[in-house]
Length: 412
Ligand SMILES: C[S@@+](CC[C@H](N)C(=O)[O-])C[C@H]1O[C@@H](n2cnc3c(N)ncnc32)[C@H](O)[C@@H]1O
Image: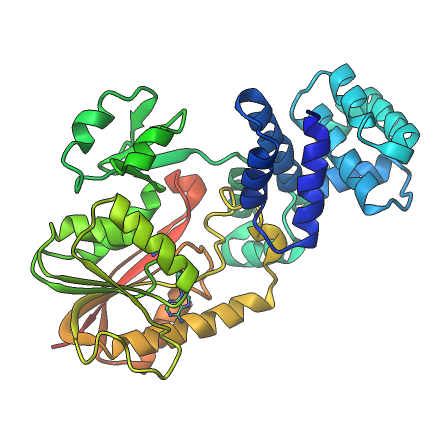
C-alpha cells in the first residue's frame, strides 16, 4: 500500500470537491483498510500539506524555477516537500517513495526533491523573512483583516496557533450513570486546568466515545451553555443545535427537568443531532426542524422561552487549527453575508424570548463583524435588550479554540 499515492488521491479529490479533508481521509482510510501507523501517516501528510500549502508552493516555484506544472505533479511535489522539509521523513524514503508515485513526471520530481535536500537548511532559515501569508500559509486578505483588527503581533501569534495540529478534548457526560467510574479507568487523560469535566486525551478513547460516557468537544464549547445558565424546570430553546455538543451540556444542567427544544434547519445535521443525543442519554430534549430565516411558523407554536441559545453558523475563524479547510474555502465577502444570516436568525429567535429571559449569542469566530459589532447593532435596534456579560476567547492567549459569547437580557 503506497501511502504517498493515497495522499495524492485524497488531495486531488479535495481540490475537485467541496468535501472536508477530514471526511475524505476517513473514506480513504476505510476503502484502503489502513490502520495504525499507515493511517496516521496518511493523515499527517494530507493535513500538513494543506496546512502549509502556500509555503510548499513557494518552495515548489523556487525549486522548479517557476515552471508550469499540471495539478497532479504539483500535488506530488507538495507531498514530497512536506515529508522532507516539514515532517522530518528521512530523505531516501521521502524521495524514493514519492518519485514512485510520479508517473511520467518522475524525472522532474526526483531532481526537485534532491535539490530540496541540498537547499533545505537555507530554505527553512529564510522562512522567518517571508510575508506572514506565505510563512504561515494563510490567505492574504485574512492576514490584512487580522492586522487591522488586532495588530501584527497578535496576528502572528494566531497564525502560529493555526499551524499546530489540534489536540482532542473530551467532556465527561454526567447524564450517563457510569461515566465517571468508567472514565477513571482510561489512561491518557489530563484534566483541563480551568474547565471542569474536560480532559485532554491522547490517544482518543474511541470506545468510550462510542459508549456515550463522554463527547469530543473543545473546552471553549462549554462557555456559551454555561453563560446561558439553564436551570431545572425552565423552558429553553437551542435554536441552532446540531450536532448537539451544547444541547447535551444544557440538558445536563437541567437534569432532565423542564422543557428543552433543540432546533436546526438541516435535516442531515438533525439526524446527527438525534444520534448524538440518544448516545449521550439526553432523553428530555425535543428535536425539531426549523429554519429561523423562513417565514414558517415554528414547530413549537407560540411557546416563549426563559433562555435561548443562538449558536449561529459562522466563519469558523476561531477553529482554523482544527478545521484545516476553512482558510482555503472562506472568502472575504462571506463575512458580510454571514453577518446578515446571523442577524436574521437573531431577529427571528428574539420573538420567542420571554420578558426577563436571557439570550446567548455565540460563534466559533474571532471576527468582530460576526461578534461584537453584530451584537452592538442588534442591541441598537432592540432597546429592550441589555448586555449582561460577554467573552471573546482568543486561542493563543486562552489556549483553546476561539469563540465568542454574549448574554443579552430582555427587560421585563
Ligand atoms: C455552529 S453550528 C451549531 C453547533 C451546535 N450548537 C453544537 O454545539 O453542536 C450552526 C448550526 O446552525 C444551523 N443553521 C444554519 N442556518 C440556520 C437557520 N436559518 N435556522 C436554524 N438553524 C440553522 C446549521 O445547520 C448548523 O447545524
